[in-house]
Image 1: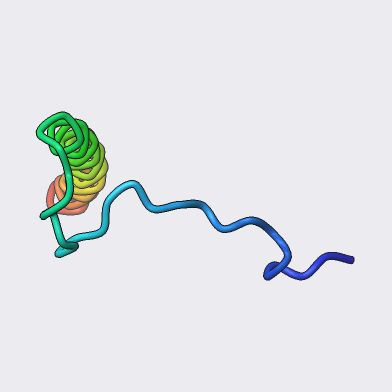
Image 2: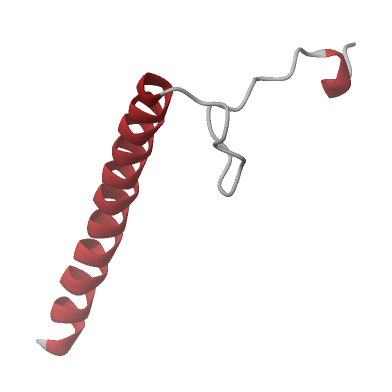
Length: 63
């Protein structure tokens, strides 16, 4: 059996609030792209959750 600590740790691509001093413009652009993709993913999940809740609320209102 393997402990979780034995697995290699995944390197974070960006950490909120990290020092940006030594990053090149290209690296910053890459991180901006990653963060935009993550924002889109979060917004899509939020939309899906609020949509299903809205449908459920409408269903119960009509009864």
